[in-house]
Length: 256
Length: 237
Image (tube, rainbow over the protein chains, first blue to last red):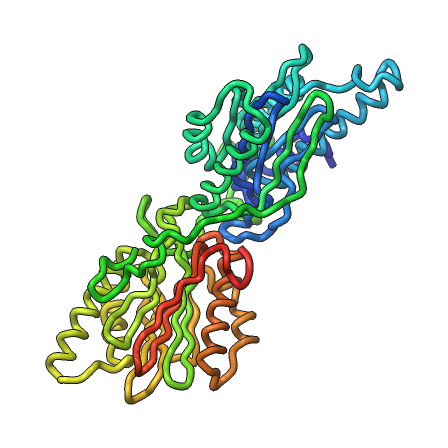
């Protein structure tokens, strides 16, 4: 019984099932968008706390932002079980590093920086893709690089990677990206960054069937490391007159 | 087959996957790509003297919410209303036809049509075009004969008079709740509260339902529409 993530299924199953090439599955329990931006203190990331079971909003308190080591934060959309496996793998690596570090007293020396985590994930995801059995996730990695500047990168289920000043996955890549592009500036304050992310999450709640208005925001800073907020609810607006006026009247347009 | 081969190739029957899910919900499976759907929660409860109808307001194309404040309660005649679920195009077309026929009938007979007539008209259209339609509707209204009555017309064109009706993709989540809340002979207040509560529970769990709750209370004296905004729901989101 293989517990390794890279095996992508046991060897015995592969030989019994000669259709080994058919192992890519459908995601079952899924998380939606993850958004992240760099700001003057570091990097900020947000995701809602919903995991859907098909169209059902089944798990409303799922945690899709995880801290891997005190300096690195990852967020994941897509199949939640695969995200949990990835998180477990990274945390296990971090623990091993800590326990086998040259000096037990020098914390900083053992930690992988965010850029290293990002590169490692690229290898893991691409390797599984080659076995036609991907970890069905879009992952966002935030933290700092070894040189000390802030880092924000993306890895998807087939091992595509890129880094940028702001990242959006899932529905966010369609709806939130234009807003981020418009409003992003180098060196935003924490308040501005948070307001921008909350605005994007509100739009996603309005327009994504698989989104929830209960979100978490997390930030990574040099001094304090990773801080993930408790989940909280966003205010939404339904008060426009055009919304309230009924449309499907006898002489109306049908009210689609 | 090479009879001298040491290993014979097995004839592979298609391997049954232990979990078959194509990612589509029952409501959207038959829609053409890009077609607009009202994955929905709709509900109607009659009370002494009338009917309460309610619906959510989400219209989705796939997982994109095309309209977050849609109006799914269509008026067919003065005291006859219809809750729409399924394809938005199909239900709008059906609503238009039934309105047309009902208004003609009212002129010909000189009095308001009954809810039963409206329901059976809708049934005729849904049944005879069942291969081309994806529409599940609930007809509710008031007439002097039956007072408040509710008819459920699901996919296929069955028409069945019911003590209360729920429909749409979100209704699956509230069967238990409605079964426990419903009782014979509810008052207008009780029925209205029940509708709003049940729909907000369905909206909390169904990805294809959401937005605001629209209700209409239909009585002999007239129709009263209400709007419950998405940040003031009895439960959820």
